Length: 187
Image 1: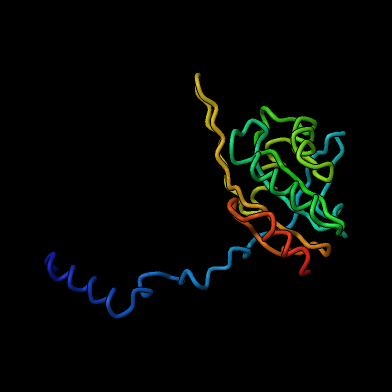
Image 2: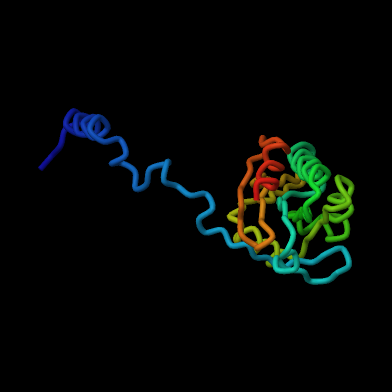
């Protein structure tokens, strides 16, 4: 059977009128952004020691991925984390994980992160370690190099992990420190 363009257009219009969500497997309202996130990493600290997510059990953890040469996004993320840490008396730490394994050593990443607050630390590692950590947190990133440019793009969320090691929230870059602090203080 041959369908004309008018027949196909009529059928599509009918589907959209009767049930727009019929065209989608899952409604946006039912998507859980935390689904599939694993609070797990094995990375290297500024002393060259291997650390894991379990080393921070008992503390609230603010965690973000970025890179030290970032001109705008990463300084804002790190500054927000630092302000939250400054504003809470609860046991808390900020962890900044560099996705730029070629240019950022764990020591460089730690110096960058701790400049925002002394309760922040920087972690890094080799490509496989960082890629695994990013995958666990559903972070996407890309490093693009040419003869004249070096570009790093990445997810800029801040993750709040409770003292029990469970994910409490995911905050986009435009979230205020006060909003993140409120979630810490509520839990």
